[in-house]
Image (cartoon, rainbow, N blue to C red):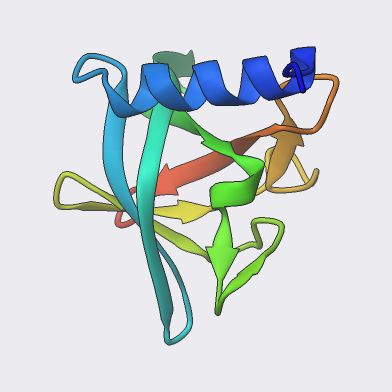
Length: 125
């Protein structure tokens, strides 16, 4: 039986991520006592300065991870990312956080195959 377009997108994405040292990262995803490992792709890494009242500039980092929907597994079940889940990447911990009161993730594609997970590095204000 031939692959559907959906299967091709899903499999090609996983192949690119798994075989790419430039874009893919081996990560651990933790919620409470449950941890799983997988491969994710850094989708955004933006450093921005904002002028506050009094002329003070603040630098901050925004990062998203792309993870295959079927790879976001907690306690053996595929689930949605939740606020305060932790993603460990290269010795740094990133906490799953919503952007401006929205959900902590969005779909990266129209088919719901890829999650775009919004995170903030732990310890940053």
